[in-house]
Length: 193
Image (cartoon, rainbow, N blue to C red; front, side, top):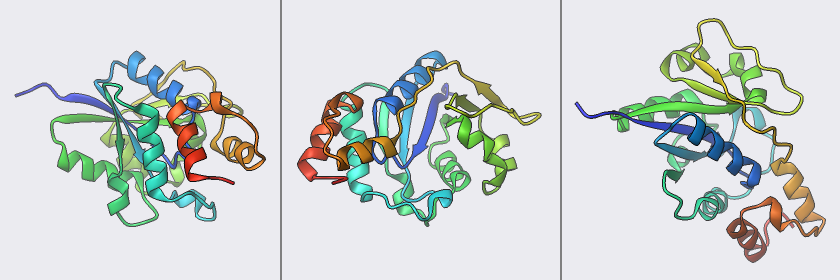
């Protein structure tokens, strides 16, 4: 039997993806010794039903621009073909069936961990895969008893996609907050104006 590839799943709307996302992904992939890290671009979070988000294809393309040809990273549109709102447990079950030779881990911020008991079938999710939690400003980490959760000492990132969108809307020059290809794509497609 072949060795399973360890694969981290970093879910998000990535509206847009920014250097904070990239730094966290890089840190966790490296320090958790993952073979690959997939950015799962979510069409709609059940907790953000009223948030206006850019078209799915724009957000997927921005993730592709961000990672470029960097080995070990992948942009995934797996949730685009699934019912919305998207539920993490459904995506995990689907990916486990489709990729039986991969060992998936979930990557989330402390803010999401605080809400995990509100997630669909969260007990099943906690049983199915290890979770790596990174710090978020203003959020503490309480690990549920018996859960396979590792709190990583990743850098605390105070950059948010909402900050980026607001700055772009106000015509601020913020190219260093985004991977170069993402900044260029936003400018070219006139996003968030």
